[in-house]
Image (cartoon, rainbow, N blue to C red; front, top):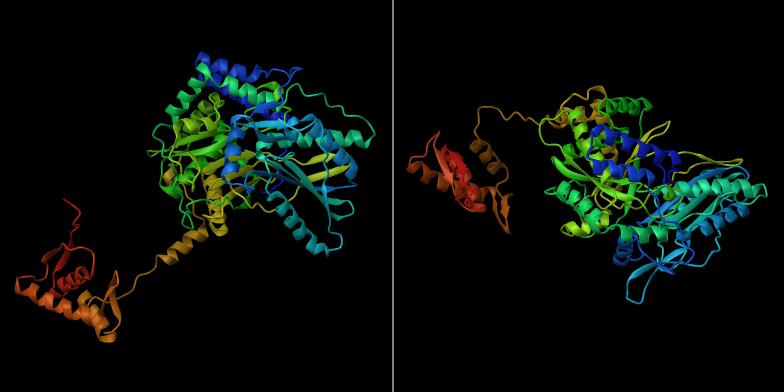
Length: 597
């Protein structure tokens, strides 16, 4: 999976809205729900007025990132990189001019964060224009084989450098020349000024501007009706009163009683405070697999996203043993038509609760996921940050609140800038906002990828988890009627390995008792330590002598074969002496837990 970001086409939102409307109608939801769906389709943000304030409030999404930046200064885990391989005769001056025009059009690209006189964070637009220049790197002096790795290193360093949120622009770029007609373009934005959809807007505008400027023409793009500042202001004003309460009450009810933590088995002990260092592992799927899963979903009126999410929930259930937990997913949150062409941080996180209890088949799980997702879409306007604030979960610096795992489906596309060909450039991912984020990439060569916390997991574990998810997807496609606990995870090689590991039987013979085997150890190594506890220890010889004395006493009071002898002492050396003594006397020991009543 590339660090280059996905270019989303405008028809993606139309599909999302139309799917939501059809599914709501099919579900026969109440009139208020239908009205919500209608407002999603027809709503508008108010246009910019002639008199605009000099400062705008932060959106709820921005406010959360601002606080995180104050809490973790100098970190880059909310940087958003996009990296492209550019083939063709690139005109750098035209490209920079195109970037300059995009920044002029979108105030958010000229925005920084300041404190007002009351000490409240605000977003401030800097001027009408900001000069933008790409950092230039030339690798033509290197051997061809070394250029690729050096370019990846440059892009990784560029994308992992922190932004100062008080200084605009929160946006920079680097251009690496590999050879004539071959460049790598890396753009990095802070998440507070963009989201996944925004990157699509940015690339579409750059594409159009580069073409017309290259022909000596002027920009054909119409001026924007609104800017991100108006959205933030409208969001603050709109999320109040009855609508806010309806949304909040839904989510409080939906998440009531849900465990706050998904206890994933990790390779390392969870640190007290995560560093947000991360990595990425990817795996290519057969195209027929996603086609088959789409057919499974259609049988239940579910989208491919819902089907893949249901399978991911089953994977997490099998890894953790938990049947109730939350998985996060991002939604574009651009319901109003004049938001479509805006760059900014609109995306919202929805908590999709997994409730997998009972002996359910995959189809039954899919129906549950579908219904949960539809309800979540209907109440998508409440910012995740406000939900966390209201629910006030136990704060833990080692985990995210409510969700520690994210799931998303992406559709990447290549672009053309006139005669230039752009394709995604594979670069290293060094950050992770969550324990795990699963990406499924819909393309001619579909992929699954996991962005993971390197504080918790090794790359080999993540590779194995991807293999288990692929195996699970194949099993779902082949037999969605199978009960989910019976769906296989392990590959044939893993099953063979487990079979080998389980062959641990040793033939001790049937002619000797445990007490006799112990006495053989005493004869062979009488001075070796046999048992140790809290700084105290007994050698085999010492343990044998003490056990013999106690065994003689036990026989004198009637202990013989088949006699059960209770051992009710605290854990320690005396407990082991008693166990060996009972066996030597011929009886069977019955350990008692003294904490029981």
